[in-house]
Length: 290
Image: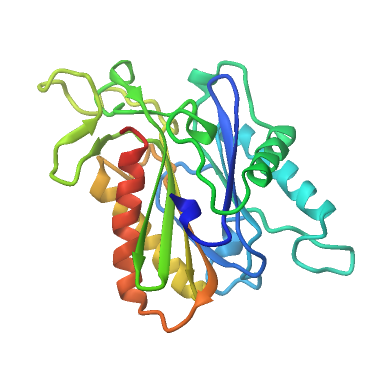
């Protein structure tokens, strides 16, 4: 699980057809991200680009509710500030809380995650504590996720939230994936694990609903990485999406990958770590529908 990485907490708030997942990382963790989908719903991702001033992040928020659900990050930020955590300024700490949302408004009906739901997910992470397992599947941000919509939304099947981890010596890398893709989830041998129920001869993209499909990934490692290296890891997380989702990164998807390094283990071979990031991301995606 993602919590195999030392110092990581994960918590959920699960509602009616939607939810929020919060990943709490140790103070001083460095982060970056890459957005490849054509229709993202995000917050603070520009700040994570290499070359921007701020390098450190406090939490990552993954949420349902489309653009409405990004308000969950406000509750997380305010709660962290109350504990004195965040980027130091003369006016007090400003928590750095990047967030990304999936479109689940059909499944969720009128439910929309907001600041209070973000606080509850953060509180759940605190209750679970360090290194403890957390539920996967149709929970948290994966509650209203669906997949296999590329041959018509009426042929979709449930998606969800998955996780995986891997090791390279003392380095641990974990991933969490919220899989709400337009495509199918593909096993390592190329077979379809879960996907469209349309007949094999059905046309692809008959009338895809725009902006309703997204896969969100957050990877965390205990390796010491620069912000630029975290960006490279996030790129490799997208490679893991390509291995495990077909089709992926369409103009109808809002695919986003975050990468965070806690900095415990030095002497990192970044290319070797990128291979691990690709493999672990692919397995996290698959575990969402297992």
